[in-house]
Amino acid sequence: MTTFSTQTQRLLVAGEPQPRNRRGRRAAFITGAAAYLVTFLIILPLLWVVLLSFQPSSDILSDPFAFAHFTIDNYTHALATLPLLKMYGNTILIAVVSVVIGTLISFMASFALTRMIFRHRKVQSSLRFYLLAGLAVPVYILLFPVYRLDLSMGIFGTYAALIAPYIAVTIPFNTLLMTGFLREFPAEIEEAAIIDGVGLFTLCWSVVLPLMRPVIATILIFNIVYVFNEFPFASILINNPDMATISLAVSRFQGQFTVDYGGMMASATLVLLPQLVIYALFQRHVIAGMTAGAVKG
Amino acid sequence: MIWISTRWKLLLMLAPALVAFTMFVVYPVVYSGVFSFTRFQGFGDPKWIGLGNYAELFADPFFWQALQNTVVILVVSLAILIPTAFALALLLRRKIAGSGALRALIFGPAIIAPILVGLIWVFILDPKIGLLNRFLVTLGLPAVPWIGGDVLSPVSVSVVFIWSSVGFAMTIFYAGLQQLPSDVIEAASIDGSSSWQTLRYVTIPMMKETFAIVTILMITNIFKIFELVYMLTGGGPVHRSETLVSYMYFVTFTNQQYGYGMALAVVITVLGAVVSAGYLALSRRKEQAA
Image (cartoon, rainbow over all chains, first blue to last red):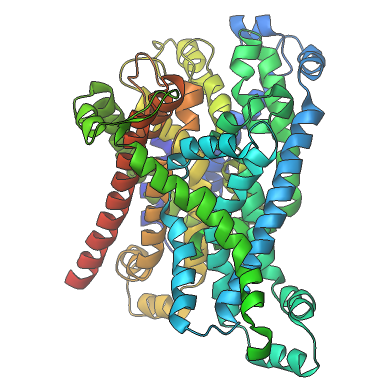
């Protein structure tokens, strides 16, 4: 971290964005080099894992800097050991079902809480506040009670055991974003639709939802990243290895591979790469979605 | 709107979210609160012991150790993360070839599952096989017990947390910088303010709200750190590297002291809220003083 802090100091002293002369050009070169160096340091741990995954485990133990032998044995071993498709299948199934349902029911509630008419206004605003209060609840306080709840509802041991809490914990955040958007939504559009005589369902589905695309995209991205990476709930609510999500499977690598570091790194790479590829394809949306969500939250 | 807002339509729209939220968020919070006053080992009936768990907590050296570690992680992470992320945002705002790609790469770690982040850093920090010690030994320096030793683990956890969050924080700062009115900054530099002065007296004060957002976000996330500890040290040796949440997880699910675990969870929740609220109050007061 020392490189970071020295750079911090240098940066804080440096200033003007436009290089005009030779000194300016040199400064521009230095800032450019600094930016590339920091980026390299940040991706170094990932590069290291990928690099080592192509070396035999014995080399990793004796001299990891040698890079004497190139091998793909680690991958054949990892692919033979890991039910990779199953892990991805489980995670995608849980993510899709929980995010779709979570977004849909949050939308319904948000629409009712902002655009529909309550006999008592107070009820409307306090219900909104009730859902938003969930933002202050940390997930770890829910772990044990949800486990008991799943058991008593008889859904423990099914995907629903995990899907239900995932839906519930995303509601406050979704509601925050959607009520925020819907409050500023122009009334003319829905009035026009209502004059045309459409019902509640058509109004929501074909008029309001299409206009909410940007918010919905943010919410989908934010929630999918959350569910994909979630570990504490998964570790407690799933006890059948066949139903393991990616995070849960990764948490067992150390026990599973013990000293087969090559196999472990190949497995880590196999989990990491697809995510990074998807991220690379959609990075602009992912970054916008995750930070927009955070800033508003 | 009134004709589509019949009572049953309202109910239909609201019920699913309200029911799911009440069952899986509100009820569990109440349940945790109630169970924190009981002794419960998973079989038989929970026994009401009043404040017994809380009393036990204050006498539990592992709790104090976990609290201390969490505070260390909080202080080290914030002290390094906030200035670094802000400096990076300033840096990447300048004309640099491919700065968009660099921003995407720096943000990258934020989308990797915390559990995988932990595993990746085992290969860096592990005293025997980790990159860092291999590097030190190659240079003829002594190996350092980054993880698994007595003292350094919380610092190492901070480093990993910083790694996974710096791009995220940087991106929020970057967005904040983009929204600054450029004429104010130009005016300052025309008035003969040096770039350091502009930064110190114009840019940073105008970014106050962004600093508050990032700090609160990071405090919240630091109080949630669990997977990193789980993967890097498992809380060991003998709970020396435990954070509050990882210790709560151990007490509840490994030791199955459910009542005691819930008391811990309640205390952590309150602590997290107090620290965030305290920070907000402090930054507000500073603003008024300035």
